[in-house]
Amino acid sequence: MNEKLSFQHVSDALAQKMGVSKKVADVFTKAFFDTVVDAFYMGEEVVKVKGLGTFKLVVVESRESVNVSNGERIVIPGYKKVAFVPEDSVVEFLNPEAEVPVEEDKLFVEEPPVVEIPMADKSSVLEETQVVEDEPVEDEVEVLVQVAEPAHVEEPQDAFSGIDMLISTPESMEEVRQQYEEAKAKMEVAVEEARKANAEKVRLEKLLARLEANAVPEMVEKGEEVSVMTEVQEDAGEEVSVVEASVQEDKSEEPDAAEEDKHQEALNRFMNESSRAEEAAVKPKKSHAMAWVLTIVFVLLAAICFFLYQTFLSIEAVETVPKTEKKEQVKKVNKPAKPKKSETSKQVEQEPTENKQEDPEATDKKEEAKPSNPTPTKPATYVLQRGESLTRISQKFYGTKDSVPAIIRVNKFDYPNNLPVGTVVKLP
Amino acid sequence: MTNKEFIEMLSRKTSFETSDVKELSATLIDIMLHNVAEGDSVTIQGFGSFEVREKARRKIYNPTSKNYMVVPPKKTLGYKMSAALKERLNME
Image (cartoon, rainbow over all chains, first blue to last red; front, side, top):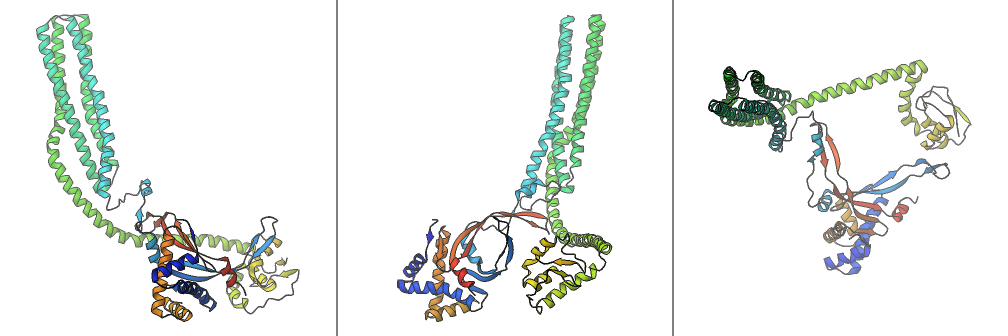
């Protein structure tokens, strides 16, 4: 590993493997690589070797740079080099396991507006989102219920204990107490069931909403409904507590039988309230009973929606592609048009002859660059003619286009690509 | 220059049969690749060196499906020509 193997190592291995003498292997290995080089000498530009790759002769053009130590301009001469591109089979050989060409990016999830879910992972993602998004809603419900329960469970209890202390009618009180106890148990059961039913409802509706419209706002509405339901219960509990509180106040003033009646009344009221609350809870209870039937229906619907969604996606993908491309094209057409106008207007203001000059420049360069031989006579300055560029001037007086940056530096042009006719160019 | 021309040129040079040259060059390449795959670098004097280069994973954007994809890291065969060859090629 990580050794530097030499020519000798390779040719020895070749001799061993092919059962030829080391001399023959040496000669062959040498000839093999010499042939590639010789092919380049013979004027070939590309040498293809099966099983290895392509060797290509590349011409690197000369360029100008700056000596880092003293800031002098230096020209790095152009040269030829051999470039190599391995064959596909070689790359496959070097990557035996990692053959996955393209993979979905995990960072893709970071973009919230994109609703497109990868086909293969769709179901699992849906499940995940269900679990994740259900939890907070359920928590909300629980919190609301917790708020609601103490209102009608603890306070009334205190009130009753107060009544016990004040009034010595244990028989009737016990009855009342039992009734209360029963009512309380019913309430709790009802609340529990209502909660379950609501959670189930919310979950199912969310599933539907998600699949059909991919719309988030609906979920929020459902969540609000749930909170409304529990608020109703809360209200009931509060009313009860208010009633109890008033009863308590009355009792402290006149602890008599009349008071007991009042208490009975309050209890009746309380019973009514609790039954009302129960009624509120029974509605979801019924839906809870229906929920299992509905789940199956919804699951079936979801499956159908999923497949429809998939097929529509593929159709839409085909349809939307040309549209978006068109839009992009239109945008592209619009965008470059504006700056061009502004540019041209600027040019018209500053240098009116500029526009006409640019186009011939480009075409003339190719045509006239070849015939114009480098003339050694170099004046100190040069007046720019129509259709000439700095590249042409550089070619004319220096025989290379590498001196353009130097000319620009000496003349300190602000816009070296936009020079008006008649500009006096200093030649370094 | 195609592989066929290359093999012909090599057989003329070594005065081997083309079929032998094919076999020999295939084996030579096989040996080199196996050595390179193990992490060694193979240096041929006067020609250059071969070694494995690792390409990092990169993110690409598919403008049609508007998806970001990740191309996993991969290994490729790298070649660097020797200084002697550079000198020979740029003698003029």
